[in-house]
Image (cartoon, rainbow, N blue to C red; front, top):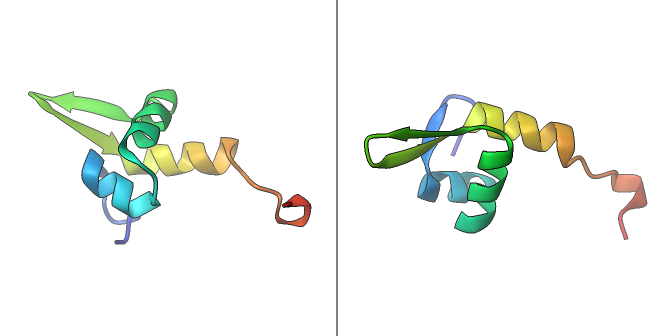
Amino acid sequence: MDTKNMRLMRYKDACEAIGLGRNKVRELAKQAKAMYKIDKAVVIDMNKLVAYLDEYYLVDADNDK
């Protein structure tokens, strides 16, 4: 799934797109301020979430153990 062209996703689609569980996606989306409630549906701004992950959860490949 190409998240660059999809800005808003529901939890299930966001979980599949980034390969994390629902609770972790919810936690990270809240931290990234990427959650929006539309009526009873909650959607995630994937652009904000991916930018947050890129900025704060960068892994140094040289120091992986």
